[in-house]
Image (tube, rainbow, N blue to C red; front, side):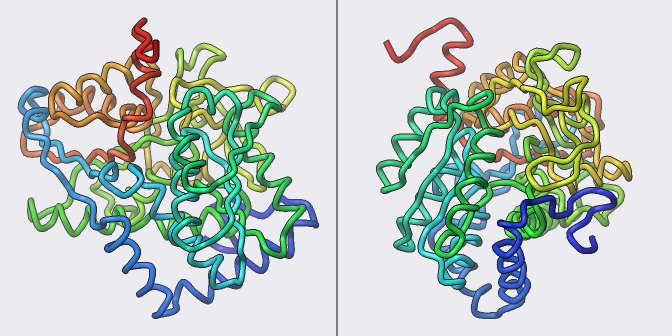
Length: 394
């Protein structure tokens, strides 16, 4: 990776009004990422506040039921706030504090990144504003309440499709207006450099731990690591320390929605093409005129029309494989893991579980799969019940 580029992807495609803020952030990050005290503080927050290391759990019942590869679950759902998002937010909030910022703004889809940002802002005594697509505020009402409970202001975004991409656009606009005291806490490995690199570095703790834990449990590396991909932060965090281990398959699971042969999908690698949006060059779902296409997934956290530039690069060099998983497959996996292991995954993570359910039975019993359970599914129970024709809020 050179100058914020992963092959042809990445870069800094932003208005001049944001350039100074991005340069300031890049300088600060390059300094603090190697600072002993910063890393010590961050590790203390990870361990004492977020509850790391998260467990690597052998899913014995699931393994026996599927009758193939051994399946381990990386339990990011056990982190404080219930998802992997807290890893990145604690890193960025601490960095913002060191830079003298007093206000955090963020975008959120499923609400987990918004909750994590509100949490860190409360912890560090900072003001917090979260932009969330109006559609997502309805789907994820519980998370909206959690954010407000912690003192954050949640602003519903009504433009466009009123989902994640529109929340990102609105947060970027807001950052342009208030650079001096505000840090934009971007939630995924996307946007202009240094965000894709910085967010990856904070999330790489996931693969660092998987590697240590699987070597301790099995004495060898896994055969495959599987994670869901929207922008791609939990997936790149799960993949990063395995990129040079060529025998470890890296599999990202995109949201196919109602199918990649329909317009109601969010599977970027499977259906998108090269473009520039939200400050980066990468693959994006586009219409025939090259405009960013409306995307759809049952999962509020995966319905983003693009993918992080490092994922685009890993796809280009065939180091990672990106598969499409439909709503129906994800919902079945959500229910399956709950019944089989007593673990309710986030509907995002259920996309990864669904693909593991497909490939594990075809693999030998001595093979090992690790699935990252990027979040817990409490937030999704009402939506899944609705999908199954039941209204639990009546």
